[in-house]
Length: 261
Image: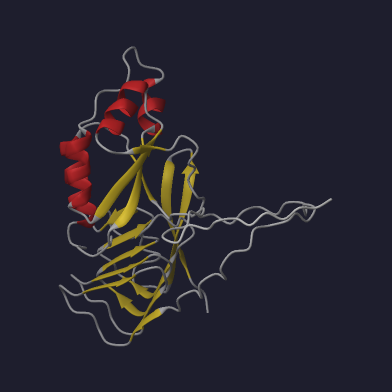
């Protein structure tokens, strides 16, 4: 026999599962002064790069570095770290990967331990055999991807364009002292003489394309090359693509190749 019992639904609230997109900070040093300098170098001239983004602090790199050392990873002033990140419009909410003392200090500072959280790979997944169909929860349809941001006027020294969450296409010259930044690819169909930073939020697959490469700075996913290291003669001033080759024997490196017609 089947019996249906009337349930009472609260009138003032509901509790449901939710997913929260997080930015992850992989902390490699407990030296907050050094961290402050490097954050200023990377984001100091991009005040709107982050927009109150929720952040997870991943301490795993510290633990990995300390695993072969005689002493455990050092203490972290989480209050100072949270204040520093907040100055860049980041909102630290969670932490993972630290030793017991670090995790206790993080909890005391108001951070939520999330030991099961994992980083999202931005590289395309390799093909896998098809899995048997399983029931999946119903979710809202995905948001329509943003189209590329198109700039059709020259960018002068001191000007900056940031294509947040999408590619950037520039149809005119990027002069020395100007900056073009994108979370995706950067296409410059004119001389690129300023700074170009693609994959600004860690997308290692992002690339930079320029009709004439003469850049002051090139960066993909935080790996950069400045004008202190001159461009190779074979690509300077030529139609060129720049891509990132991560994890080689010499570490991550930027590879430049001339685009042939």
